[in-house]
Image (tube, rainbow, N blue to C red; front, side, top):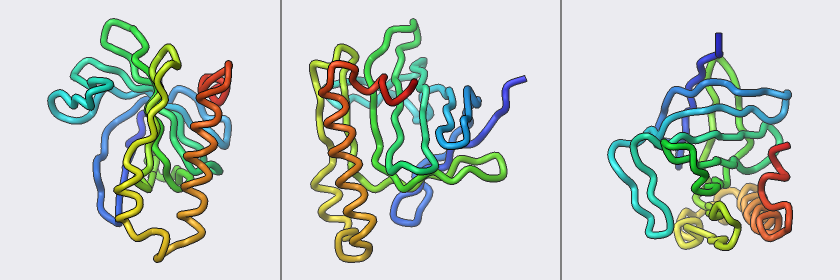
Length: 160
């Protein structure tokens, strides 16, 4: 039987969303889960739509400052990768606890579109003043994801 976990995403000390997910793999550093689109309705970003029926294969690291989420349509077509810059994940008591640090990256399935997102929200968050080390880690994480996405191997190289 597949282990069920709850992903808890917080932002600025408040729970943003929590949802059930099935554990796919855990190598001690990276834990991967599969979960259906957890928000209500459709979220249209302009460059991608998340909608009921979509499936997310999410990869969280205990030592890295990001999470990589493969986004699949309900009929099994890869839409792309949505990456959250986060503090390293904490896994305990059947939960994966992740703190969102505002910065995000979107990479289309074919790798032709790499978009840095929410840099304005990050600047407004005050993290550079309240926790300069975490802010520096977040910026390094976004840069590393962006750089990896633009290599021939792309983000899938992080998931092997």
